[in-house]
Amino acid sequence: MITRLSHLFLRTLRDDPADAEVPSHKLLVRAGYVRRIAPGVYSWLPLGLKVLRKIEDVVREEMNGIGAQEISLPALLPRDPYETTNRWTEYGDALFRLQDRKGADYLLGPTHEELFALTVKGEYNSYKDLPVALYQIQTKYRDEERPRAGILRGREFIMKDSYSFDLDEDGLKASYNAHREAYQRIFDRLGVEYVIVAATSGAMGGSASEEFLADSPVGEDTYVICRESGYAANVEAVITPAPEAQPIEGRPEAVVHDTPHTPTIATLVEWANAAGIAEQYGRPVTAADTLKNVMVKLRHPDGKTEIVGIGIPGDREVDDKRLGASIEPAEVELLTEADFAANPFLVKGYIGPKALQENGIRYLVDPRVVTGTSWITGADSEGKHVVGLLAGRDFTPDGTIEAAEVRDGDPSPDGRGTLVSARGIEIGHIFQLGYKYTDAFEVDVLGENGKPVRLIMGSYGVGISRMVAVIAEQQHDEKGLRWPAEIAPFDVHVVIANKDEAARAGAEDVVSGLHARGLDVLFDDRTASPGVKFKDAELLGMPWILVIGRGWAEGKVELRNRFTGEAEEIPADSAVETVIAKIRG
Ligand code: ATP
Ligand code: MG
Image (cartoon, rainbow, N blue to C red):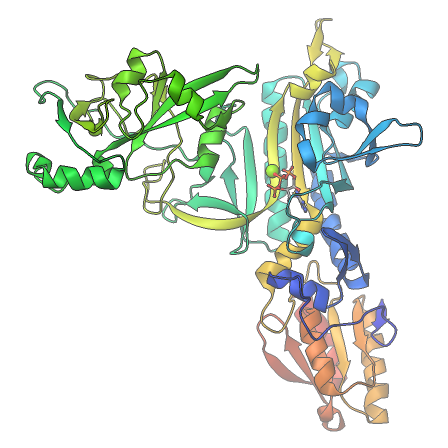
């Protein structure tokens, strides 16, 4: 194809849009790839649509490559299936709900597990039909609380979602691994820098869920990575390595001290160092020597509430996300004044393990609190703390919990270095769902032995429209977009920077030559000034820019590499061959 800029439906903007904060958003709007219609709702203009379609093609090829089959379900869905799985309610405010003229409830699909489970149930009834993997590339709707950064977090967006159905867990694992590898190929082909992180701590069994996160300072996901070993995980999934247990034999008794006005860790540490505890320790006391007991109220799925004590080293805070992931499906609530009044043994600022255990409160500790570790902690009465309280002797926790924050420099769970935090954008998610949806809809087939077999399901998503922004985010420079060849809207951008008739005619010939050799050419044939044209070429971001300018009279044209910024003069008469050779590598 030859696309003339004089004809292309495109208007580039000199200024950044007022609502744009991140580079990809600014550039995609300025370069005329997308236009905003409403918060989180965007139109795709010709150049943007070309990139989007190319990303779809890569994803489609790799999905077909693992034997997944493309179908397309509606985005407008009846309430019923989502009622069956309770997601009509559970999805909360993020679900777009609407009614038809008869008052029947509908929703705009945020993800399609229900419908795929029902679709397979509708078509298949024998083990011989399995396994099967189906996918679609389709528009999704989520009323995101904070639509952000243009197409990065939309309320209408395009996702590739696939679903695998297998006869048993081994089959699910194989389907999952096939998807995992296909995703690696997709993101490698798209030239994205990414990591794969364990998304959950394994409460659902090992690598039940992993996320693909693109490296980006503007990412909303925080993860940790061990640069030495390559281990990476969501903060929620980090497992704290437990230190070795220490002997209890011969350790000094725990001693209760009067510690007036020490309700905080800082005041407690100050007291300990002033009161001669540092001499006992042979070093200054730090917050890490104290055990902080945080009280939370869990609301279990059955509606019952339970007060639980969480013991973590005093130098760390509770990380709400980690706590939330650890106690799922229960939810965390704060204790009210009424809770404290009803449990007078909870002395604020001085809560210790003893009172919790004596009063039947479940006490969960950080994995660092192993047998034989010694702590300075609350003694359960106003103005009193206990020093030398030994885990495994003076108190026995009811279990461990991953609730403490993860910090840069913490040891990696694989024992091969230390963790640092990084930010990323979720581009893909693979998930061993298990039986949640097939149980809900009783998706069974007749097994080999004539008995029904419940199918086991996986679900896998790639953010297609988000990928456009992610690649723009990772690849741009101060001048504009910079597309990798695989997804650039055009192979080459030819600019006439010469008013001379002969040069114009020559440019037409070069463009025809490139087209004849199968290249998709963007041709800037406008009468605008060379300066404007160069700026636009840099903004639009095709990987190669061929300039037909002043050198034409001497038989020379200039080939610019948008990635490296390098420019070289090449002979005009072999320009087509040179460009082809460069592009086809
Ligand atoms: P996030 O944590 O970013 O909200 P999610 O975990 O809700 O994403 P999934 O339900 O796993 O997302 O959806 C699969 C993929 O769809 C994500 O990995 C992401 O690439 C993409 N995606 C999800 N929400 C959006 C959105 N609002 N706009 C654009 N892409 C999205
Ligand atoms: Mg996800």
